[in-house]
Image 1 (cartoon, rainbow, N blue to C red):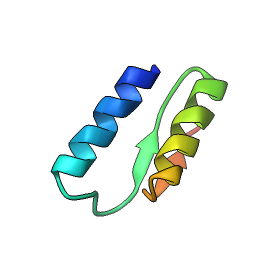
Image 2: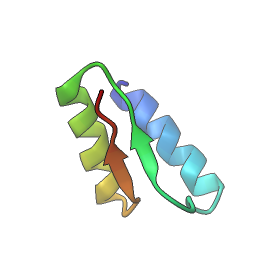
Image 3: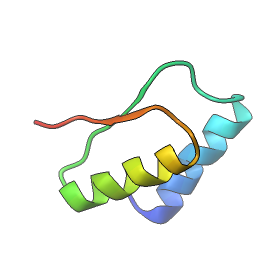
Length: 52
């Protein structure tokens, strides 16, 4: 997921007035997944990284 995709997720969450529950991040790119998790946590979302 690229930065524009993360921004799109954030926009959808904002329009939905947040998210009940946890956002699970699945990615084949470990460093990319960590970036997504870090950004979403910065915006105070509950996030977990799913690992295979």
